[in-house]
Length: 429
Figure 1: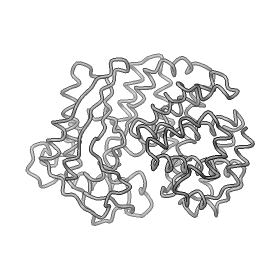
Figure 2: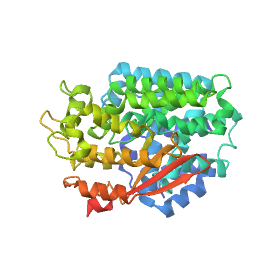
Figure 3: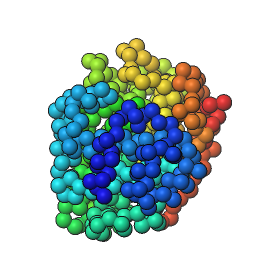
Figure 4: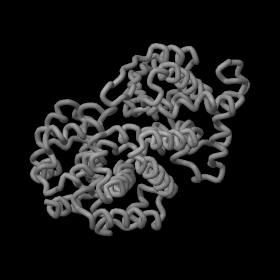
């Protein structure tokens, strides 16, 4: 099956995949289902549920597989890749070597992860990693492959957590999101097995590179490699302490609070553009954040005293934003942009006002359960694919106060995690 898949995928061209808007009756769709008949029901249900989302996701699956097999075979050269990614050949070689090592362990694992990781998007984009994981278990999608329980767990847990590295990098999440893994009985039942944690984190890292590169509109830069590797190293240090839950969470909190400024600057797209221009440094981005609240007679801004503001923001380490980068960018600028900040760019005080109010709220509500994780999601977001990106929003502090005040809270007693839903439709009216 794997060889058939590779032959099929490597016969495809990126430009041909990108041209197709409706895959349902295409050669690609029919051939794929011949190779994976157990996906037929899920695919047709996905088409019925949201055909636009299905076509985007299926195109992404084909692209990411084309990329994977092309790199694995060294069939995609540097000139081919650089057409749509800002990577040096050395960086590409680093990714290729990591793929080769994983393929030697078991050549089936990464392709399965790439195929199944986004199945949940047909049903719920915001929780799709968990939804994909559940769909795989409910439909026993891995049972047709010759995998050990150890290997099945690697595939399932990588898919369930496939946004972990990327969202820590963008600032939507923090290292404290490892709380979920440290409370995951299935994950913990395998973590003491030889090489499990190492292989899990390696799969997660490689997947994250490929996932970004698997979108025609995404860009990956050289600095992503070193930042992802550092994130993986820190996650390994945290998760290696799994036998002492308190120590592991203490370390996760330490790393999360250490990178507070980076996390806040995620809305300024520091993660994407840092170092791509001489002026785009950490100092530049952090200065822009601090300047955004100077000169405003607002008590919560503490007269621009960053030390005091930082202290008030420290509780935010428990907050994990779900699919909220677009909203955070609008808080920062009132609009979207695809380039790095100019020297003269200004950041709105709405961004830090939002974070300060949210931190204050969760600090107050966490008193009974101080270690619990907080998952924060936004409701009322427009469809970004049809949103007028040229429009500029003027988001008032009163509106931010109101949406946080009216947010709805739920506690999952099983996972010991809070879920806060923030309705932002008011700012788009």
